[in-house]
Image (cartoon, rainbow, N blue to C red; front, top):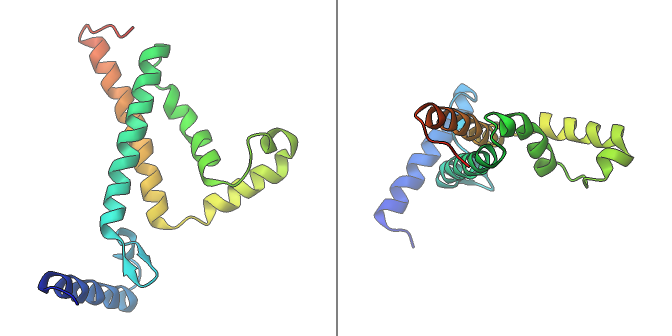
Length: 142
């Protein structure tokens, strides 16, 4: 039993999905379509969540270690650990296989996943900019 809003949003999403199917994947970049449902709200929440989490982590690291761009350089390493199924020891014991698996996993990511991970990277960059501006303004962090 759907309410008026649910029926309208479902109709809207079905129309968008038909347009995507007819005209290619231009709009599909912004929609996450899984198991017959659009997960647009989850997509935008994930974007915001990754931005905020990595902004916070990078800000704290930059503040404590008195660096500006450390997390921006460490971000690809952190993401490769998050995305792959390898243990941390596999990178040292079975190096070639571990990096091959990371490469295959990273190249097979969907556009929505890449966008979400990119928002985390943007969070680390914004954190570096904020720390730099705060230090320039005279705030000495630790």
